[in-house]
Length: 185
Image (cartoon, rainbow, N blue to C red; front, side):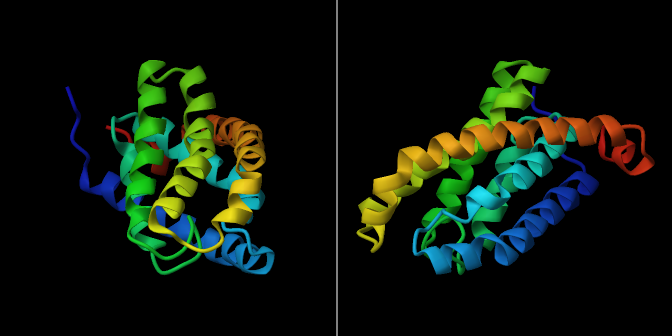
């Protein structure tokens, strides 16, 4: 049975998505612009984004929590270079990333292995899926991304695993704090 989200949890999810946007605007967007390869900047902040999202997943332990975070994030980044060129397909890409992470965590029964692999695998597949959407839409710059997509995917997977571990470590340190306890059911 699906558990409902409390208002506190929904506000927390929205704040996390906004925080992810802020990080990506300050780090990812400038690197994407300077490198000319959409998605190159994510290599810099994937550890931190994964840590944040893994932390959220462990706190909430609810189906669709990561999907909500990434879908809202996809909406927020539409006018930016984050997740590719400005198109509404970022919402679909965000939903795919979130559903993948939620599914992996759910398959592992909300255990440690699910948190270790869930967000890392989901973010890694964002590159080939994003490239598919870019080619489908006929967007410019797909040649540059297609030349490095598998290297980016593998690198994001490896760096993402570190991020997932970091998120678990931060949760371990903060799990008894009042604010974290209030976000749980």
